[in-house]
Length: 368
Image 1: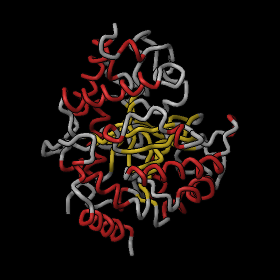
Image 2: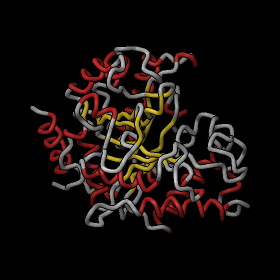
Image 3: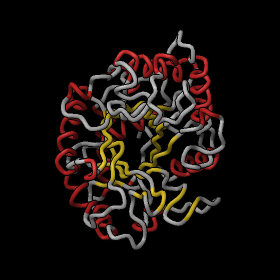
Image 4: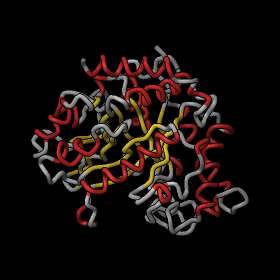
């Protein structure tokens, strides 16, 4: 059976046996396409996972976006685009033209529309500047309590959310229909490097921030094209993963962020399967989609990383997707590019029946 036949059969199966997904999504008014995307994730994760790459269409090794070029390092290597595309809204809250990685927001919108045209999926993270100090997202000064309702910076934070909502509502196809997005705010909260991180706010404050953000986007700004993903960094137990979990009614997708970082004494091939097992167990208990929301090895020093470090440890886990980070330059890249040493391993990864790229994706947003 081909990848496309496999994906379609699992999709049809899930549509037949599942109840109405809209009843279990965070947003009961989620668009039909957004509901169908969730159904697709549920069905396809029994067969394999989408491969994703951050900023894939915006820049790559030695190039930047130009109109109608649709360049991609991934496509240059394997002849196909990723199945899921990652983007980030950092600096939109400041009203800037470009995001924190110098991607023009108008270009980002066009690339999101192109990814949707391909039949692929879009996921968006957000690294907002610190609304108390004006520093960047990595300024972990105590902040959250000041931006909650009654906090002195609450009005400023609402202004942040307004700008995010306007952009998300501008994501429409050629017929004016909203493009579904997996929205992943306040990620890696169990680390301490962001202002929403472990040592910068209490559990109660983080949960309140999450709930307020979701409710404001959904109810006040009427944004109905989002699935909400909660993603933690490394963890050792279900209890640790759920420490700041806002509740099943506030989360659609469970995520894990983990990088292959031997310089930080992270044993990737040991930690990845352990954390994925915890994530999968939680996903099954809660009947939630779950995914490897960020991962990668900077500069890909292992030529066989894709097959030996990644594929071996994610096959059969039930994750909906895996996303590697961006290709910024020769000092920071996580995807292969023509001539890079891991290309043969990546091509094996690409040929795996469990890895789904853009050409494999049909009927993602349709009910039948």
